[in-house]
Every structure is written in structure tokens, then in C-alpha cells.
Length: 436
Image (tube, rainbow, N blue to C red; front, side, top):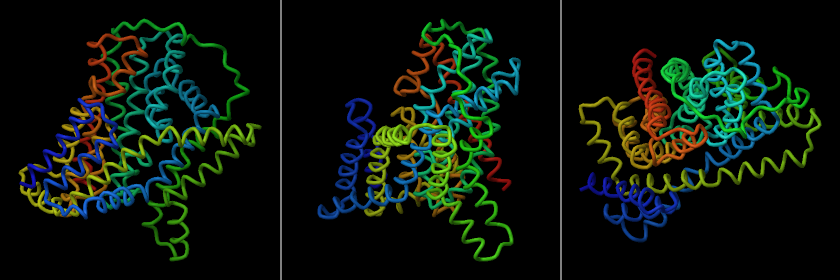
């Protein structure tokens, strides 16, 4: 009965979002109430559980996600993202442009939310294509792969950050593991896969023809790279230093600086000065941009809140315990099971963020019942949530329309790239988790 109730609640969620076009937050709340009723929760307890789930989920994450959005806005508006791209392309040369584009997408994707990074980088992709005469997908898909991998694997992106919180994982360790898995996955799904796309014909849009850029308006190379990677450096370094032989006082300071909230706040403050005020960008313009960034991620925060409500219903009703016992007895590796659940929901709903958060609520008990490393579970679900993007995913249509592709070529390029990311990611997660 418990399994049927959970399946029915998830099925209702999928129906409301996919068929009914109900906003995800509202769909999560309706599905949470339906799940509570089917699981036999007392009526007076249902609103309290939903409120608690929303609060517990948003409490640790709202600051991180909002600061991350502001930081990404700064990287984009200051010209740092463009400078990073120019520098990598200049370093690798025209023969290795796909490699440069992949690294650009990966680095720029760390502070930028996916849709923002996509819109920001597509004009740059076409600028490179016009100048180099390379096939558009051959040059562009590696960058899109880099953006996607950062979005699915690396905190402080919303889904990985939320999963870290739900599973009790460590943000720094998950980030290090995500980099360990993400880089080789990028090489396969980016430059290597792009070799198969060289003969796909793309009609380039005239409005993306390059114009002469004013170099004086871009920040310096060191400044751009240092600021974009500073949050990663602070969080990862603090995690690495936690294993060193340090005094308790030093360890406390390191943990404080490496806390994701403090790391992002320091990065935002330093970037505001070095990329903004020190380059005579008006303070009012910077602050206006930060306000716009927070407004842009309001929908993401609501999705995370809704997922928290559904998760809490499973917990308070005792369904998570029953489900955990049931799943633990299945002859499937827990990480593969988490990946599969996320994959099914991704195919049904389209959104990688919703797929990851919903899957976490279902397989979360596995972390306790099987003893699997929660950091690897975050990445396994992230890999599954990127799989098989198709016509119900906004990223699919953005790729199709920007690159002026047929449906066949969009499946052949975008959908296959996302599937390679999820598949190679899972393989590497299983290998590294057995080794480390």
C-alpha cells in the first residue's frame, strides 16, 4: 500500500506538470496533500508537515542559491565570462577549439545557472563559428556539455546543493567528487562526441554575426579566472585542509571560510570590488543586477520548497522507512537505483532540477538503510536527472531554436549529448565510489 501511494503521488505530480501545465510548486503541494491522505496521515498534521518540509529545505539553501545567482550575474555582466572564453580559445588555438569551448562552459557554468549560461554563451559560440568557419555543433556542443555537467554535478547549483542538504552529505566533498567525475565526463560528451557532429549543417542566424569587441571594457585574464573559480577554491580547499594536521583554532577558521555561505559571500564581495567598483562600474548598476538575479531564481526556490514538502510527507507518514526497507532488498546497486529513479522522472517531467529533487525524496532512505556514501548518491541522482532530454525539456527547444535544427538533428546532438553525460557520469561514479 505504501509503494502504491508513493507511486500514485509521483504519478499525480507528473500528470499535473506535464499534462496540466500546473506550476511545479503548486503541483508539489497538491501531490503532497494527496500522498498524505493516501498514506493515512491525520488531517491536522498535513499542513504542519508541509510547512516544516518547506522551511527545512529552504532554510539552509536560500542564502546559498541567492548568493550564487548574484555571483553568476556579476561574472556575466562584468565581461569575465567573455574574457575566460577568449583566453581559453587563444590558449588552445583553432585546432582545439572544441576543447576550449568545453572548458569555457564548465568554468563559466560553475557560477551561472544553466539557462543563464546558455543564453550568455550561445552568441559567443556563433561568434567563434563565424571566425573559425567550424561547424556550429562541432564547436557548440562541447560548451553546452560543460554547462550541463556543472549544472547537474556541482554545488552550489540548486539541485546538487539541495540533495547535499537532504542526504546529509558534505558540500565540499561532493564538489571535489563532482569535479573528479565531471572533467572526464566532459571530455567524452564534449570534444569527443562533437567529432560525430561535424557534418550536421546549421544555418547561422545573422543577428549573431560578431562585432568588434572593445578589449578595454573586459576585465583582465587573472581577475576573470580568479573570481569565477574563487567559490570552488574556497570550498574545496577548506575540505582538503580539514584532513591536514591543524590546530583546533586554525581548523575552526578554515571551516568558517570554507562554509558554502561564507565562501560565496566572500567571493561576491571580492568580485564586486575587483570586477566592478575597481573597474569603475557604478555601484547602483551592480546592485540592480543582483536584485534582478534574485528575481530570476524565484521559480527555482519555489520548486525546491515544493520538493521539501513532498519529502516531509514521506518522512512524517513513515513511508520513507517502509520504502527504504523495500528498496534496500532490491538486487540493484543503490547508486544505480537512485540514477534510474531520477532518469524515469526526468523523461516524464523534463526538468533536471525537479527530477533530481523528486528522486531524492524517494530514494533518500537508501542512504540510511544501505550505508551508501551520500556524496556519491548526490552525483548519481544528478547524472540520472540529466539523461534523455527530449521535447518536454526547455533546454531541448533552446538548442533547437538557437541552432536552427530539425527535430532529428536536435535528438542526434542535444539529446544524445545529455544521455552521454548521464551514462558516462554513472559509470565513473560507480568506479570512483568503489575505489575511494
